[in-house]
Image (tube, rainbow, N blue to C red; front, side, top):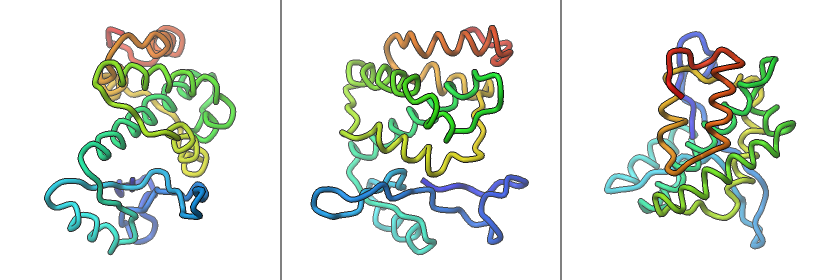
Length: 186
């Protein structure tokens, strides 16, 4: 993945260009680097997209549609879980703090969502998704405060198939106890 510069956010640094948000999380058994949060491209123009991103210092690998789809679901799980688990805290919590201090809650919610993906949409995330998501959160989530704006509700609640009891419980708590999602029927 990469950031897109937005006015007043500081993203993009002095150049105001998108920044690469991927992070190396170690080496596999063959000694090759393992990456998390890489941008991915698929389809007819995948090589051209990857080349342009690479020219601007953003890692991008070319994949087939199924791998790209898995990566997009992985990102959806990341955005949903870390923000919801973090936004129900009494004090402001960033994504890295969720990964370090609320790991069990985040992990349980991830597995609930992923198991329903497998049953509802016939999508299975690749082995190690949990390590990749926690690595991204720990390495890139510092000072990225968890939030749950109303616009994110449909993205977090209605996109995942099945009955996600833990997700519903957290959303109800966020609405009833934290004052979030006002005007939304959870």
